Each structure stands twice: as C-alpha cells, then as structure tokens.
Image (cartoon, rainbow, N blue to C red):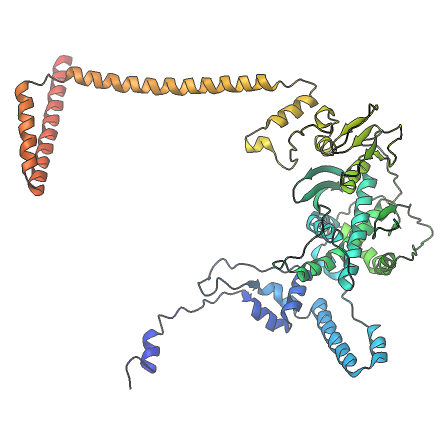
Amino acid sequence: MVKGHGKHQSKRFAGKKEKAPKISKYITRTQAIKRLNCTMEQFRKICILKGVSPRLPSKGLNTLTQKKTYYHIDDIKPLVNDKVTLKIKQIRAFKKHIRKLTARKEFKTKEQLLKTKPVIDLASTIQERYPTFQDALNELGDCLSMVFMFASYRVSKGEKAEAVRLARRIAMEWEAYIKHTNALRKCFISYKGYFYTAVVYGIAITWMVPHQFAIEKNETVDFNVLHEFLSFYVVLMKFINYKLYTNAGLNYPPEITKINGVEFLGTVQLEPLQLQKETEVVSKDQDVQELNEALKQVKGEGENLATEMLVNHDTGASVQVTSHFVQSSGSGLFSGMVFYIQREVPRHPVAFVIETLGGIIVDNVDDESITHQIGERGEHKNIEREFIQPQWIFDCVNENFILPCGEYTIGQKLPPHLSPYVNEEEEGYVTERRKQLDAIKNNTKYDYEEEQKKEEESKKIQVKDLESDFVDGLVEEMGEEKKGKAKAPSVSKEAKKAEQEKKRKMAVLSGKDRRIVMKNEMLERRQTKKVNKFKERLAKSKEQK
C-alpha cells in the first residue's frame, strides 16, 4: 500500500480539516427552505409578509460559515403550519393547474377555476406584526416611502400595474388627510427627493417623495422583491387610512375626480361620515371598485382589527378617539395668502405644502387677490405682489415663521437651504445662516461683518494666549540652561586638546573597542554625578546645622 493514501491519510489529516462549527438556535437559508418545503421565491415572499429577517450569530462563526445567511429557529418553526405559507402553496398549485388547462385547451373549465382563485388574507398577519395602532404608525415611514416611489412609477399592464394604481390612490388619500388635519411640520428638498414630516396622534412620521422623473430599471435592483413589499404595504395603508378617516369623521374611500388626459391624477373630495345610514361609495372607476371590495373585508374583519389595534394590550388602556366630522379650519402658517405657481416650478410638492398650511392656490395670473407668485425665471411687471422662489415656502415651514421675501426674490442667489433634521448645537458648529434666521425670529439685526470681526478677535486672543504659554515655557527652559551654564566651570585649553585626542583615538578603534570605551566613559560620568550629588547633600546638611 502506498504511503499517504487510504486509511493512513484519513487518520493523519483528520484533525487538520476545518470543520463547520455547530451553531445552536440558528439554521441556514437552504435548511429553512427545506423545512418549509418551498422554493426560493416563495420563501422570500413569506419572509416579507411575516417580517422575518436574517440574523447573525454572535458566536460559532468560522471562515466556512461567514458567507452563509442564518435565520433563528424560533422564527422559522411557526411558519411551517402558518396560514400564509399554506395559502402560498395553494396559489402555486393553482397556477400549475391553470397551465395544464391552457395546454389542454380547456378554456371553459379554466374560466370557472379562475373565479375560485385563492387570495392571501393579511388581516391576521397585520394584527400579529402590529398589535396596536401606535405600533403601525411608528413603522409607517418606510411604508409611505415605498408607496410614493411606486406612485411615481409609470403604469403598464398586468397585476403589477394594478398595484401601482392602488399605490397612487393611497398616496393621494394620505396627502388629503394630512391637508385636512394640518399635520405637516417639516419639509426639506434634497437631490433624492422631498422629505416630509407629519405628526399623527403625537407620532412623527417621516417619508420621502421622489422627484418627478421617470424611474429607469436597474439590473442591480430586483423589482420583484419591491413589488412583494408593495403588496403588503398597500393592505396595511388601507387599514390605516380607513381608521384615520373614520376617526376624523370622514367617509372612506373618498371620491377622486379625474383630470382628462392625465393618468390617475385629480382632486380628492372629502365627505362627512354618515353614521346613521351606512352607504357605500359606488364608482365606475376600477380602482375605487377594488377598494370597495377590500372595504367589505375592512368593515367586517378589518373594523374589529382596527379597533383592536387601538387598544394597548400591555396596559389595557385604549386611545380615546372622537368620530365626529372636523372641518379643515384653514388656520395655518399661510392662512390668508393667495399663491400662483408658474409652469417651471414642480407644482405638486409646492401645492401640497401650501394647501396643508392654509394657503390658497389660483390658476389665473391676472387675479388681483394673488399675494405671492412662485417662479424661478422671467421678468415681472410692477404689480403689488411678492415674486418669490419655491425655497421660501419650505424655509418658512421649517422655521414656523414667515420670513422676509427679499432674499428669495426671482433672479437672486438663494441663501443656504438648511436641513431641519440636523441639530447644529449638538454637532458643535452653528452656521451663519442659522444665526441669521434666529436673529430674524428675535427681531434683531444680524451684521455679518461684525460677527466676522468678533470671531477674528477671539482667534487672535487664543493665538496670543498660546504664544504666551509657549514663550513662558521656553523662557523657563532657557533660564534653567543658563543656570546650569553659570554653575559649570570654564573649560581650559588643555581639556579641549584632551577631548580632541580622544576623538581621534575613537575614530581609529574598531566597532567593539569603541563600544567598550563608550561604556566605560558612561559609567565614569554616572559615578561622578553621584559623587557630586552626595557632596551637595553634605554641604546643605552642614549649612543647616
């Protein structure tokens, strides 16, 4: 038998192989898929709907196991017999059956079978993930950002197009509610889009609306995953909008008037809720009909679910909600102001902010009631109105104060647009623009030149203090050196000649001999220092006596 092969090799190198460690309470993604008996796409959909995310084990990772994704066993075990997983498997079998019928050309049986298509009921999953209404509002930022992103997406045909239409409708319903309650508190323009923050039931909700550009598909982004998230977020927003509208005394779903020639854009008409007579809004619009069908579930199971979400199961206390109709008071930062928006300005975000804070928008330029005209270019006549740029509106909202329009007039260079999400005092640096805005609020003048002079003077004082400290340190060191030099005796010519001869001898010596000589000299110096210190101590002791 050849050496290094067979049994001898296995015994010899058995301990040197790098084995995967046993990580308890965690399983890999492939193991989870085998346990659930599903495909990769189905497993991904289950995790999105049930809110299961991968976890990183704190211990037991090795070079062989670092690249794998792990899930906790307690998160995977309940999914085996869950309603969502069983329904997803039924949908898979249903699609397989339809494919067979199309191959056999049995179209009548196919039409009958399509009427009994299984649908996933997410009411129980929403109740599990968000036991209270406040929990749902706390995690509403990502949901709204996803909905508004797909609302700006172009519509095509198929199931995904219907989801985009529903996303647009839900986005319009949310904006209508924010306008009705005047809940907007912050807004900011960035290169990504528009950031908004509204306060609903005492909870600050921040979401992002992208700019009005066509979204191009990127190969690195899997839009199928995003559509799975959208399918869950759309159902969640239906429950939330229904509860918010009914608590505000409004009828849900509201009617939306379409604009001819524009795809699914219009105005939302809010109507008071009729408590005595239960009426359903019937519309020819397909999207409204879909929402009416969904509302049957919401008014049945969903109404109980929404009321249960308002109850805090931990404390047993419920949130007091009044279900009477509250008209929009029209009171806000821009109440009493009339605006006209020019063509070059993005109309939707500017109009949303103005209408939320009580302003009125007019489409006729020649209207004499206009107080502010918003634009970015053009020459204007001598009319008694303010010609401003859109940044003025966003800065006024963030400061909660009507700023002077002089810096924001059309044609002038705009001041810096400060973010309301940054606390400059905590970061330790306050910008000049922040000082100017604080001075405007306090009715004081801010002189930039005087502030610069004060800063320069303070810097000079700091530099002088540092220089004085440095000079004092140098003087002390120089004084000690001078004292040492004064104490040291003067070197005679004979001593200098002796030192020069030593240097010549050292240059002639080899490396080892030179080191020996240097060590001896060092020892002699140490001994002389010790002797001198001992003599000084004796002299001091004699003087004291």
